[in-house]
Amino acid sequence: MGSTGKAYIVTGGSSGIGLAVAQALLTQDAIVHIIDISTSTPKALIEAEQTGRAYVHRGVDVSSRAQMTQAFKAIFEHSPDVHGLVNSAGIAPDNLDGSGLPESDESFRRVLDVNLYGTWIAGTAYLNAVLDRNPELKGDVDGRPIKEGIASIVNLASESVIRTDPGMASYNTSKHAVVGLTRSWAKDFVRRGVRVNCVAPGMTDTPMIRNDSIPPEMVDEFINAVPLKRPARPEEVAKLIVFLLGEGSSYMTGQMIPIEGGITI
Image (tube, helix red, strand yellow):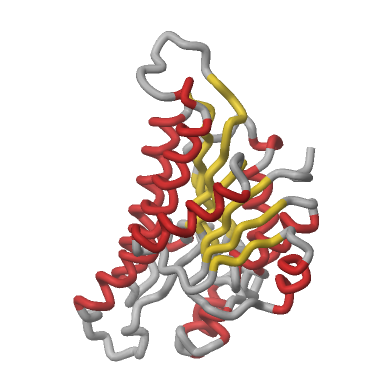
């Protein structure tokens, strides 16, 4: 069954994997709410926004509880029943210059703020909204029948939790923590009908590698280590995420699914 008529939230949805997820959901006639720190809208979303199928919440920092609270208020006023959340907002550290020096405190904090705390803020805001929408799920659920199919969350980890990437201490740390958060939420909310999984992509052809956020020589070295000899395409990762959002993965929760071209073999 597709996503026709269902509503979803995608953080970091104006570029990269998040944009590919938004586009994939739109092709299934879903309503998509995009949260992004960017103040511009990609061409791929303009038509969907004009026709009322996409809603872009611009200039929102996922690491700001105040900004996210405001965005979620607007989202749930328009779409009271949101079926899923994708936490795809993320950044890389600022020390990828080959110097071998530790990254700054500011960089370490900022990466964790966006990659981990941003996931926490979006996830807790969404979970609270789901429980408010379904008050019967609040309180002690022990002894009650297990609910299924209420909601689904997909977080973004990284293949770096399997094969640690050099020079990326903050990024690796944040993604390990995202896996732990995914498993904790999955355990805590399974009886309330919320499934929580994460994907662990390898290097993906996104603005992070195309705009020199990661040095070209590091990109080349990584790609040479991948058995498929190329980065992932965002739409390939998006297909997996959409699967985890939907009913086809109804027996999956608390899982981390690698999609990394075989680099962790």
